[in-house]
Image (cartoon, one colour):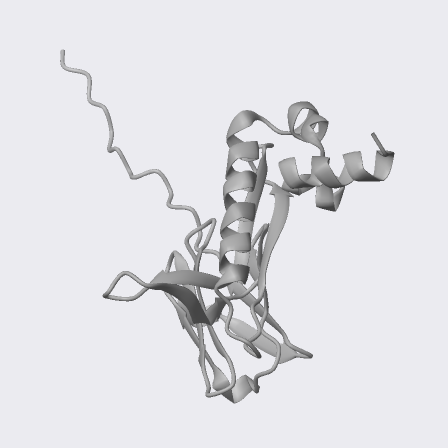
Length: 188
């Protein structure tokens, strides 16, 4: 068989080979759960692309990172598939932006990519354990709920937006001191 024909047939069987990922990649570097998650996300992305409206852009991607547990994690971002009340599947106009959260000692730093908007269009809402980012303009819609790695002081939040990148820094709460347990009295 012609080698180029064999490669085309292999790509049809293994869609990950298109990106240089072969079965050995999954066997050598990723455990079964992560490989299954990646395959599921890739299949979802391909279904989304098949439902795209002409002229309507779709953004969907994946971030691979090593978590604090030392294990690799996949996180996807961009447009999401949605179902109408009638059960029809389509693609949401609202995008989930690419986000990085870093625990920086005394602070928590969140970096969010939200291009194509003005800083006045961005709504931030901070609680002790979450950050919500919302943009709702006729041209762009973004939404993201970020679970923060530590409890924070919402009133200390500082945010800057430049060149499509939102940087948010929030001071952490002081860890609670062990409650005063009183004085143990010996009975005589």
